[in-house]
Image (cartoon, rainbow, N blue to C red; front, side, top):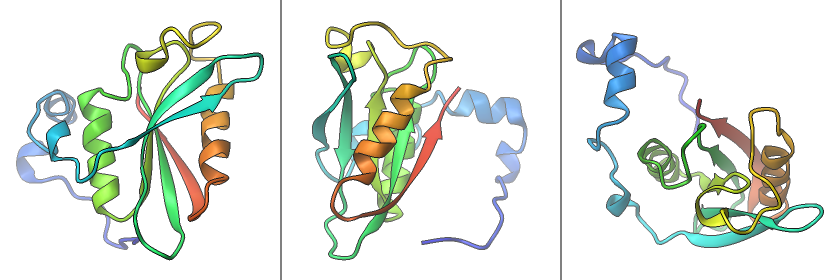
Length: 145
């Protein structure tokens, strides 16, 4: 599943500003192209409430690495950039968990408080929850800012 070739952007996408603007366009992997319907999961928070996640498990016998995707400030697990990343990782053979951080998206009414940049507990809890699932050989956390 690993590629040894370094990433090289196509000529029309080499400018970092163009890459940033291009990420907001629904050009690649729109949500409707996701290969399977994600499972809705609730990850318990200490002291009550839960994080909500949309999880797509690979249907293969051997364990796979799971990617935990975290949205940026003001985003959700349904943000285009998160969904496009989820589609790409799933197609590459990874399990994928798109997590709504505390008090965001589907979990807006199910958390004791809202998240902030210094709240590192939520990504840790999400990674531990995913790592404990059967068929997961490792976890990689990918976050957007």
